[in-house]
Length: 57
Image (cartoon, rainbow, N blue to C red; front, side, top):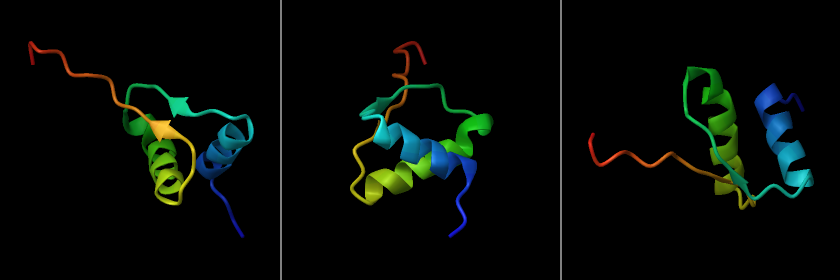
């Protein structure tokens, strides 16, 4: 089975017991955010979060 770097990162985060991931979404993190979403859909413990939008927006 071939894994991407993003999938390996998510696996390591799970092994380390990480429960929440905070960050600013951007094109450089697209693959990681996709892997986090797949892991969550499969019952994984990691919750990717989004920054709250400012009321001024």
